[in-house]
Amino acid sequence: MTPDHAGAAADKVLIHPLVVRITHWINVLAMLMMIFSGWRIYNADPIFAFKFPRELTLGGWLAGALQWHFAAMWLFVLNGLAYVIYGIFSGHFKSSFLPVTPKSVWNEFKSALRGRLAHETGVYNAVQRAAYMGVICVLVALILSGTAIWKPVQFQELAALMGGYEGARVVHFVAMSLVCLFIVVHVVMVALVPRTFLPMLTGRARKPLPGHGG
Ligand code: HEM
Image (tube, rainbow, N blue to C red):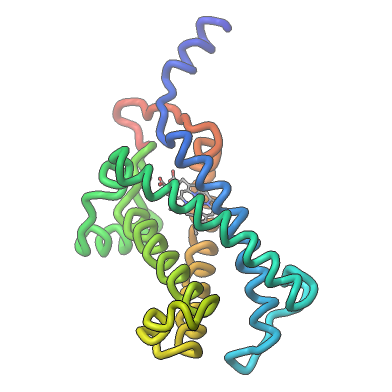
C-alpha cells in the first residue's frame, strides 16, 4: 500500500456496522420474495377491482406462491428480529435514529423539496430517521396482520382487533402498499445521492473534510 493509499484508508470511518449491513441486504431479498409472491396470492382472490400483472408475481400459481411467501416469511422475521435486538441493545437505534422531532422532520422535508436535503456522511437526516422508524413500525403491522391471516383461529383476538379476517387482509394490503412506497422513495433517494450506496456494502465512508458538506 502506498503512503497515499494508506492515508485514504485511514480517512475512512465505519458508518454502518456489519450486523446492520447483513440484515439490511437479507431483508431486501426477503422483502422482494414476500412482495412478489404476495401479489400472486392476492390475485387468486383480489380484495379490490384489480389484479397485479402476472409477470410481476412470483410462484407461478397459488400453491407455489404460498410456498415462497411462507419460506421468505421465516427469513424476514428471524432476520428482522436480529436487526431489532441488535438495534436496541447495541444502542444503534438510539444513536442513529434519535433525536427526531416533528419540527425537524418538517423543516428538513421542506429543504428536500427545494433540493437542499442535508446529507452528512454517517449521519441520517431527520426525514431519513422518521422514514426508517416509520417503515419499521409498518413492518411490525405487516407481521401482525399476516399472522392474523395465516392462523385466523389461533390468533382470533389479533384478527378481531383488525375487524376480523377480511379486515386483517385490508390492513396487510395497506401495510404492503406503504412498504412499496417506502422502497420506491428510498431507492430514488439512494440514486440521487449515490455515494451512500457503497458504504452500505463496505461499511466505510470517507470522513468529510472540515468545511465541506458530507
Ligand atoms: C435495492 C433496494 C435498496 C437499496 C439500494 C437500499 C440502500 C440503502 C442505503 C444506501 C442505506 C444507507 C443510507 C445512508 O447512509 O444515507 C440504507 C439504509 C436503510 N435501508 Fe435500505 N435499501 C434498499 C431496500 C430497503 C428495504 C426493502 C428496506 C425495508 C423495507 C430498507 C430499509 C432501510 C433502513 C431501515 C435503513 C437504515 C438502516 C440502519 O442504519 O439501521 N432498505 N438502504
